[in-house]
Length: 377
Image (cartoon, rainbow, N blue to C red; front, side):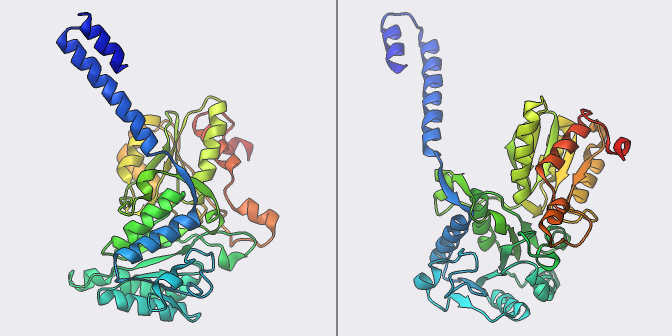
Protein backbone atom coordinates (compact mmCIF):
# COMPACT_ATOMS: atom_id res chain seq x y z
CA UNK A 1 0.00 0.00 0.00
CA UNK A 2 2.76 2.46 0.93
CA UNK A 3 4.64 1.72 -2.29
CA UNK A 4 1.50 2.45 -4.34
CA UNK A 5 1.05 5.77 -2.57
CA UNK A 6 4.66 6.71 -3.22
CA UNK A 7 4.30 5.93 -6.96
CA UNK A 8 1.11 7.99 -7.18
CA UNK A 9 2.74 10.89 -5.36
CA UNK A 10 5.79 10.76 -7.63
CA UNK A 11 3.53 10.81 -10.70
CA UNK A 12 1.75 13.90 -9.35
CA UNK A 13 -1.54 12.09 -8.90
CA UNK A 14 -1.96 13.14 -5.25
CA UNK A 15 -1.78 16.53 -3.59
CA UNK A 16 0.02 16.83 -0.24
CA UNK A 17 -3.08 16.92 1.98
CA UNK A 18 -4.67 13.87 0.35
CA UNK A 19 -1.36 12.01 0.50
CA UNK A 20 -0.99 12.67 4.23
CA UNK A 21 -4.55 11.50 4.89
CA UNK A 22 -4.14 8.29 2.93
CA UNK A 23 -0.80 7.62 4.61
CA UNK A 24 -2.40 8.17 8.01
CA UNK A 25 -5.17 5.69 7.23
CA UNK A 26 -2.70 3.16 5.87
CA UNK A 27 -0.52 3.42 8.97
CA UNK A 28 -3.55 3.14 11.23
CA UNK A 29 -4.65 -0.03 9.44
CA UNK A 30 -1.15 -1.47 9.69
CA UNK A 31 -1.01 -0.63 13.39
CA UNK A 32 -4.35 -2.34 13.94
CA UNK A 33 -3.07 -5.44 12.17
CA UNK A 34 0.08 -5.44 14.26
CA UNK A 35 -1.96 -4.97 17.40
CA UNK A 36 -3.98 -8.00 16.38
CA UNK A 37 -0.79 -10.02 16.11
CA UNK A 38 0.41 -8.62 19.44
CA UNK A 39 -2.78 -9.77 21.14
CA UNK A 40 -2.88 -13.11 19.34
CA UNK A 41 -4.10 -15.57 21.93
CA UNK A 42 -2.63 -18.73 23.31
CA UNK A 43 -4.79 -21.15 25.24
CA UNK A 44 -4.61 -21.60 29.00
CA UNK A 45 -6.78 -23.47 31.49
CA UNK A 46 -8.48 -21.53 34.27
CA UNK A 47 -6.43 -23.58 36.74
CA UNK A 48 -3.18 -22.50 35.05
CA UNK A 49 -4.33 -18.88 34.92
CA UNK A 50 -4.93 -18.82 38.68
CA UNK A 51 -1.63 -20.59 39.33
CA UNK A 52 0.42 -18.14 37.27
CA UNK A 53 -1.34 -15.16 38.87
CA UNK A 54 -0.49 -16.46 42.35
CA UNK A 55 3.09 -17.21 41.33
CA UNK A 56 3.68 -13.74 39.88
CA UNK A 57 2.06 -11.84 42.74
CA UNK A 58 3.97 -13.84 45.35
CA UNK A 59 7.18 -13.18 43.43
CA UNK A 60 6.44 -9.45 43.20
CA UNK A 61 5.40 -8.90 46.83
CA UNK A 62 6.94 -10.80 49.77
CA UNK A 63 3.90 -9.92 51.90
CA UNK A 64 1.66 -12.20 49.81
CA UNK A 65 1.23 -15.74 51.09
CA UNK A 66 -1.21 -18.60 50.47
CA UNK A 67 -2.89 -20.64 53.18
CA UNK A 68 -5.56 -23.34 53.24
CA UNK A 69 -6.20 -27.06 53.30
CA UNK A 70 -3.89 -29.11 51.05
CA UNK A 71 -2.45 -26.08 49.26
CA UNK A 72 1.14 -27.18 49.89
CA UNK A 73 2.26 -30.81 49.97
CA UNK A 74 -0.76 -31.99 47.96
CA UNK A 75 -0.29 -29.09 45.47
CA UNK A 76 -3.87 -27.92 46.02
CA UNK A 77 -7.14 -29.85 46.03
CA UNK A 78 -7.67 -28.65 42.43
CA UNK A 79 -3.94 -28.23 41.68
CA UNK A 80 -4.25 -24.43 41.55
CA UNK A 81 -1.22 -24.09 43.85
CA UNK A 82 0.91 -26.65 41.99
CA UNK A 83 4.62 -25.92 42.36
CA UNK A 84 4.24 -22.98 44.73
CA UNK A 85 5.42 -24.81 47.86
CA UNK A 86 8.63 -25.86 46.11
CA UNK A 87 9.25 -22.29 44.92
CA UNK A 88 8.27 -20.25 47.98
CA UNK A 89 8.58 -22.69 50.88
CA UNK A 90 6.27 -23.62 53.78
CA UNK A 91 6.31 -20.14 55.35
CA UNK A 92 4.48 -18.69 52.35
CA UNK A 93 2.47 -21.73 51.24
CA UNK A 94 0.87 -22.84 54.46
CA UNK A 95 -0.96 -26.15 54.86
CA UNK A 96 -3.64 -25.72 57.51
CA UNK A 97 -5.71 -28.14 59.59
CA UNK A 98 -9.33 -28.73 58.57
CA UNK A 99 -10.54 -25.74 60.56
CA UNK A 100 -11.92 -22.96 58.38
CA UNK A 101 -12.80 -20.73 61.34
CA UNK A 102 -9.25 -21.11 62.70
CA UNK A 103 -7.14 -20.46 59.63
CA UNK A 104 -9.46 -17.72 58.31
CA UNK A 105 -9.07 -15.89 61.63
CA UNK A 106 -5.29 -16.27 61.38
CA UNK A 107 -5.40 -14.85 57.86
CA UNK A 108 -7.49 -11.84 58.86
CA UNK A 109 -5.15 -11.14 61.77
CA UNK A 110 -2.16 -11.28 59.42
CA UNK A 111 -3.88 -8.79 57.12
CA UNK A 112 -4.41 -6.43 60.08
CA UNK A 113 -0.64 -6.34 60.47
CA UNK A 114 0.12 -5.56 56.83
CA UNK A 115 0.54 -8.96 55.21
CA UNK A 116 -1.53 -9.95 52.17
CA UNK A 117 -2.96 -13.42 52.75
CA UNK A 118 -4.73 -15.45 50.10
CA UNK A 119 -7.04 -17.83 51.94
CA UNK A 120 -8.15 -20.81 49.88
CA UNK A 121 -11.33 -22.69 50.76
CA UNK A 122 -11.72 -26.17 49.33
CA UNK A 123 -15.25 -24.96 48.59
CA UNK A 124 -17.13 -21.86 49.67
CA UNK A 125 -19.68 -24.17 51.27
CA UNK A 126 -17.02 -24.81 53.92
CA UNK A 127 -16.46 -21.06 54.32
CA UNK A 128 -19.72 -20.92 56.25
CA UNK A 129 -17.63 -22.12 59.18
CA UNK A 130 -15.58 -18.93 58.81
CA UNK A 131 -18.25 -16.41 57.83
CA UNK A 132 -17.93 -14.50 61.12
CA UNK A 133 -14.30 -13.70 60.30
CA UNK A 134 -15.09 -12.86 56.65
CA UNK A 135 -17.97 -10.50 57.49
CA UNK A 136 -17.39 -9.19 61.02
CA UNK A 137 -13.60 -9.30 61.27
CA UNK A 138 -12.60 -8.48 57.66
CA UNK A 139 -15.41 -6.66 55.85
CA UNK A 140 -16.36 -4.26 58.65
CA UNK A 141 -12.99 -3.41 60.19
CA UNK A 142 -11.98 -0.55 57.90
CA UNK A 143 -15.24 1.25 58.69
CA UNK A 144 -15.18 0.42 62.40
CA UNK A 145 -11.60 1.68 62.73
CA UNK A 146 -12.45 4.98 60.94
CA UNK A 147 -10.19 3.95 58.06
CA UNK A 148 -7.16 3.25 60.26
CA UNK A 149 -7.06 -0.50 59.61
CA UNK A 150 -6.97 -1.92 56.09
CA UNK A 151 -7.63 -5.61 55.56
CA UNK A 152 -5.90 -6.63 52.31
CA UNK A 153 -7.00 -10.26 52.17
CA UNK A 154 -8.38 -12.54 49.43
CA UNK A 155 -10.83 -15.34 50.13
CA UNK A 156 -10.93 -17.66 47.12
CA UNK A 157 -12.10 -21.12 46.07
CA UNK A 158 -14.82 -22.90 44.10
CA UNK A 159 -18.36 -21.62 44.46
CA UNK A 160 -21.68 -23.04 43.32
CA UNK A 161 -22.62 -26.48 42.10
CA UNK A 162 -20.05 -29.09 41.11
CA UNK A 163 -21.51 -32.46 40.11
CA UNK A 164 -23.22 -35.03 42.32
CA UNK A 165 -22.08 -33.62 45.65
CA UNK A 166 -25.47 -32.86 47.17
CA UNK A 167 -27.11 -29.92 48.89
CA UNK A 168 -24.34 -29.09 51.39
CA UNK A 169 -21.62 -28.77 48.73
CA UNK A 170 -23.45 -27.09 45.84
CA UNK A 171 -24.51 -23.61 46.90
CA UNK A 172 -23.81 -20.31 45.18
CA UNK A 173 -22.76 -17.58 47.63
CA UNK A 174 -22.65 -14.64 45.22
CA UNK A 175 -25.81 -13.04 46.63
CA UNK A 176 -24.72 -13.75 50.23
CA UNK A 177 -21.41 -11.95 50.01
CA UNK A 178 -22.66 -9.45 47.44
CA UNK A 179 -25.07 -8.03 50.02
CA UNK A 180 -22.32 -7.15 52.53
CA UNK A 181 -20.78 -3.66 52.62
CA UNK A 182 -17.00 -3.73 52.97
CA UNK A 183 -16.46 -6.71 50.69
CA UNK A 184 -15.59 -6.77 47.02
CA UNK A 185 -17.00 -9.86 45.31
CA UNK A 186 -15.64 -11.13 41.99
CA UNK A 187 -16.64 -14.06 39.78
CA UNK A 188 -14.39 -14.96 36.83
CA UNK A 189 -15.48 -17.03 33.84
CA UNK A 190 -12.53 -17.39 31.46
CA UNK A 191 -8.80 -17.85 32.03
CA UNK A 192 -8.13 -14.17 31.33
CA UNK A 193 -10.86 -13.23 33.81
CA UNK A 194 -9.38 -15.49 36.47
CA UNK A 195 -5.86 -14.22 35.99
CA UNK A 196 -6.81 -10.55 35.87
CA UNK A 197 -9.26 -10.62 38.75
CA UNK A 198 -7.03 -12.62 41.11
CA UNK A 199 -4.18 -10.19 40.52
CA UNK A 200 -6.50 -7.25 41.14
CA UNK A 201 -7.84 -8.89 44.29
CA UNK A 202 -4.37 -9.50 45.74
CA UNK A 203 -3.32 -5.90 45.07
CA UNK A 204 -6.50 -4.40 46.51
CA UNK A 205 -6.37 -2.82 50.00
CA UNK A 206 -9.77 -4.27 50.98
CA UNK A 207 -11.07 -7.82 51.55
CA UNK A 208 -12.04 -9.52 48.29
CA UNK A 209 -14.08 -12.68 47.79
CA UNK A 210 -13.14 -14.47 44.55
CA UNK A 211 -15.82 -16.97 43.57
CA UNK A 212 -14.36 -19.55 41.19
CA UNK A 213 -16.09 -22.61 39.73
CA UNK A 214 -14.81 -26.15 40.06
CA UNK A 215 -16.30 -27.32 36.77
CA UNK A 216 -14.36 -24.83 34.65
CA UNK A 217 -10.91 -25.18 36.26
CA UNK A 218 -9.91 -27.52 33.45
CA UNK A 219 -11.50 -25.57 30.59
CA UNK A 220 -9.16 -23.90 28.12
CA UNK A 221 -9.65 -20.32 26.95
CA UNK A 222 -7.63 -18.01 24.71
CA UNK A 223 -5.47 -15.53 26.62
CA UNK A 224 -4.11 -12.37 25.01
CA UNK A 225 -0.47 -11.37 25.09
CA UNK A 226 -1.41 -8.37 27.24
CA UNK A 227 -2.97 -10.67 29.84
CA UNK A 228 0.23 -12.70 30.03
CA UNK A 229 2.21 -9.68 31.15
CA UNK A 230 2.99 -9.75 34.87
CA UNK A 231 1.59 -6.23 35.32
CA UNK A 232 -1.83 -7.21 33.93
CA UNK A 233 -4.94 -6.95 36.06
CA UNK A 234 -8.63 -6.28 35.45
CA UNK A 235 -10.48 -3.35 37.02
CA UNK A 236 -12.75 -4.31 39.90
CA UNK A 237 -16.33 -3.18 39.32
CA UNK A 238 -16.24 -3.32 35.52
CA UNK A 239 -18.32 -5.81 33.50
CA UNK A 240 -17.30 -7.16 30.10
CA UNK A 241 -19.48 -7.38 27.00
CA UNK A 242 -18.65 -10.87 25.73
CA UNK A 243 -20.93 -10.62 22.70
CA UNK A 244 -22.61 -7.55 21.27
CA UNK A 245 -26.26 -7.62 20.26
CA UNK A 246 -29.27 -5.39 19.70
CA UNK A 247 -32.42 -7.38 20.58
CA UNK A 248 -31.96 -8.62 24.17
CA UNK A 249 -29.43 -8.23 26.99
CA UNK A 250 -28.33 -11.34 28.88
CA UNK A 251 -26.35 -10.85 32.11
CA UNK A 252 -24.44 -13.74 33.70
CA UNK A 253 -21.38 -14.56 35.78
CA UNK A 254 -19.02 -17.49 36.26
CA UNK A 255 -20.08 -20.72 34.53
CA UNK A 256 -23.40 -19.20 33.45
CA UNK A 257 -21.54 -16.94 30.98
CA UNK A 258 -20.70 -20.02 28.92
CA UNK A 259 -24.33 -21.14 28.84
CA UNK A 260 -25.43 -17.62 27.89
CA UNK A 261 -22.98 -17.54 24.98
CA UNK A 262 -24.29 -20.91 23.81
CA UNK A 263 -27.83 -19.55 24.02
CA UNK A 264 -26.80 -16.46 22.04
CA UNK A 265 -25.49 -18.69 19.23
CA UNK A 266 -28.78 -20.57 19.06
CA UNK A 267 -30.78 -17.34 19.15
CA UNK A 268 -28.70 -15.85 16.34
CA UNK A 269 -29.78 -18.69 14.06
CA UNK A 270 -33.37 -17.66 14.72
CA UNK A 271 -32.78 -14.00 14.01
CA UNK A 272 -32.44 -12.77 17.61
CA UNK A 273 -29.32 -10.75 18.36
CA UNK A 274 -28.37 -11.22 22.03
CA UNK A 275 -25.87 -9.08 23.93
CA UNK A 276 -24.10 -11.14 26.61
CA UNK A 277 -22.62 -9.30 29.59
CA UNK A 278 -20.08 -11.08 31.80
CA UNK A 279 -20.58 -9.32 35.14
CA UNK A 280 -17.12 -10.23 36.54
CA UNK A 281 -17.83 -8.10 39.62
CA UNK A 282 -20.86 -8.81 41.82
CA UNK A 283 -19.97 -6.08 44.29
CA UNK A 284 -19.45 -3.39 43.13
CA UNK A 285 -21.91 -4.05 40.31
CA UNK A 286 -21.32 -2.34 36.97
CA UNK A 287 -24.74 -0.73 36.75
CA UNK A 288 -23.78 1.77 33.99
CA UNK A 289 -22.78 -1.00 31.55
CA UNK A 290 -25.91 -3.04 32.27
CA UNK A 291 -28.22 -0.04 31.98
CA UNK A 292 -26.57 1.15 28.77
CA UNK A 293 -27.07 -2.28 27.23
CA UNK A 294 -30.73 -2.50 28.26
CA UNK A 295 -31.38 1.00 26.92
CA UNK A 296 -30.10 -0.29 23.59
CA UNK A 297 -31.90 -3.66 23.50
CA UNK A 298 -35.00 -2.80 25.60
CA UNK A 299 -35.05 -6.33 27.03
CA UNK A 300 -33.25 -8.14 29.86
CA UNK A 301 -32.66 -11.74 30.90
CA UNK A 302 -30.54 -12.34 34.02
CA UNK A 303 -28.87 -15.71 34.57
CA UNK A 304 -27.41 -17.18 37.76
CA UNK A 305 -27.28 -20.61 39.36
CA UNK A 306 -28.11 -19.36 42.85
CA UNK A 307 -31.54 -19.29 44.47
CA UNK A 308 -34.15 -16.92 42.97
CA UNK A 309 -35.16 -15.05 46.12
CA UNK A 310 -32.89 -12.05 46.92
CA UNK A 311 -30.56 -13.11 44.12
CA UNK A 312 -28.07 -11.20 41.96
CA UNK A 313 -30.64 -11.10 39.14
CA UNK A 314 -33.17 -9.52 41.48
CA UNK A 315 -30.72 -6.72 42.26
CA UNK A 316 -29.94 -6.18 38.57
CA UNK A 317 -33.64 -6.14 37.73
CA UNK A 318 -34.33 -3.50 40.38
CA UNK A 319 -31.45 -1.40 39.06
CA UNK A 320 -33.09 -1.41 35.62
CA UNK A 321 -36.49 -0.56 37.12
CA UNK A 322 -34.94 2.40 38.94
CA UNK A 323 -32.80 3.75 36.10
CA UNK A 324 -34.11 2.46 32.77
CA UNK A 325 -37.73 1.40 33.23
CA UNK A 326 -38.97 3.59 30.39
CA UNK A 327 -36.72 1.76 27.92
CA UNK A 328 -38.17 -1.71 28.57
CA UNK A 329 -40.35 -3.32 25.91
CA UNK A 330 -40.97 -6.52 27.88
CA UNK A 331 -40.93 -7.76 31.49
CA UNK A 332 -37.52 -8.71 32.89
CA UNK A 333 -36.86 -12.46 32.96
CA UNK A 334 -34.76 -14.17 35.66
CA UNK A 335 -33.18 -17.57 35.07
CA UNK A 336 -31.94 -19.06 38.36
CA UNK A 337 -31.40 -22.31 40.17
CA UNK A 338 -34.51 -23.96 41.57
CA UNK A 339 -35.73 -22.75 44.96
CA UNK A 340 -34.82 -26.05 46.64
CA UNK A 341 -31.72 -27.57 48.26
CA UNK A 342 -29.61 -29.15 45.54
CA UNK A 343 -30.77 -32.75 44.81
CA UNK A 344 -28.18 -35.51 44.74
CA UNK A 345 -29.67 -37.52 41.86
CA UNK A 346 -28.09 -36.49 38.54
CA UNK A 347 -31.40 -36.08 36.70
CA UNK A 348 -32.86 -33.90 39.45
CA UNK A 349 -29.64 -31.92 39.77
CA UNK A 350 -29.85 -31.00 36.09
CA UNK A 351 -33.44 -29.86 36.56
CA UNK A 352 -32.39 -27.70 39.52
CA UNK A 353 -29.74 -25.79 37.56
CA UNK A 354 -30.13 -23.35 34.64
CA UNK A 355 -29.62 -24.91 31.23
CA UNK A 356 -28.93 -23.35 27.83
CA UNK A 357 -32.47 -24.07 26.65
CA UNK A 358 -33.89 -22.16 29.64
CA UNK A 359 -32.01 -19.04 28.56
CA UNK A 360 -33.11 -19.47 24.95
CA UNK A 361 -36.76 -19.76 25.95
CA UNK A 362 -36.55 -16.70 28.21
CA UNK A 363 -34.94 -14.61 25.47
CA UNK A 364 -37.67 -15.65 23.05
CA UNK A 365 -40.34 -14.69 25.54
CA UNK A 366 -39.01 -11.17 26.03
CA UNK A 367 -38.67 -10.84 22.26
CA UNK A 368 -42.31 -11.99 21.89
CA UNK A 369 -41.23 -14.95 19.81
CA UNK A 370 -42.89 -17.70 21.87
CA UNK A 371 -45.92 -18.42 24.03
CA UNK A 372 -45.58 -16.80 27.52
CA UNK A 373 -45.09 -19.12 30.48
CA UNK A 374 -48.47 -18.11 31.98
CA UNK A 375 -50.25 -19.28 28.84
CA UNK A 376 -48.65 -22.73 29.07
CA UNK A 377 -49.20 -23.20 32.82
